Length: 376
Length: 105
Image 1 (cartoon, rainbow over the protein chains, first blue to last red):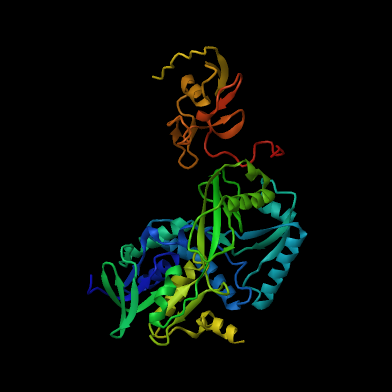
Image 2: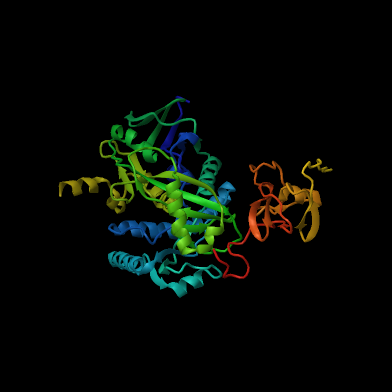
């Protein structure tokens, strides 16, 4: 083990690290993905699973374009993953909606959508506002709440099953000959001998390049590699109901029906400085109440489970990708939307990490933007 | 075979299990009534379609979900019978809305 050497060590086996590792491995790199196992604070296992464009990039046009690119790549990505791993990540792209209760929410949403369209080329989002009648056409047979006036619809939005996606990526890594190591969490990482060394409980691993993709675990490892990982946690709680016959064909922010029938309802947005994942009854009530205002018949269903995860956010909510100036070949990657971006991470980002230097097209995502804002 | 212990309280309640009248004790549960009626499985899995039947009889396992007086997903082992109660199998997933639409919430 101590002598094991790789082209890449990816630190973090959640959806971000696993997608990058998968992308590197399928391009022929020798890859180790180091993971904490089931005790990790892992957003990848607790999220809503959307593959979602329409809300991304307000204030950073490159993030909108990057997300659209991922939405476009997701279909072939899912098919390839299924073939490689035997596990279907359950990707469906039939568009997605954000519901608006009352005229004020509708007007706010309309303004946001217009502002986002104004920042990029028209092809990026193609989101439109739809009224209640059009919403009813998207959800035939579903009784909509009286307050629902309409919402926004983006044809490029879709869903995946986050649990299956992670399982599929781990299985695919194995099939491609990569070392997925849930027994080898990174304790420390450093530049050494023209490459990188990572200390783990089962020995030191070495590689020519290293990618920090450990979410909340990245900040502790970043400094020694000359990387900047300003990760902020945000609490998000979800709940799921008992299984019901398929009725929701289109995904929505806040309500989606899983392939096996459960209605997934979420999520809360709570600032926190604590790294705890304790769910609360108050959150569950808040989630259920809004969902019932949108679809009153949800009130009939039994909730079977509620849980809470910690989002991985940067200070502006946009992704961070950077290569170390002090130690070229060391990279950090973290973002809120690991599911949505999984496809572009496995393709364009993996390509970028294989290049001699990180390509200029990723410059917008460099964390130097946070320091520039501070200075101004 | 399932055999019922004598109930010191006595008395008889008639419930309708899958459309057929069935006489049970006044303190019996709907799950017990379904077992006594001998209907075999009491639901099918919403995922696999597999037939299932009451197991723990104490409110824990959720295997006994049935449609009771038209209300789906009741834990039949926690519902005490009542004269005329309708106890039906729950086949596959329940519907979000009852057939007929404008039912109250």
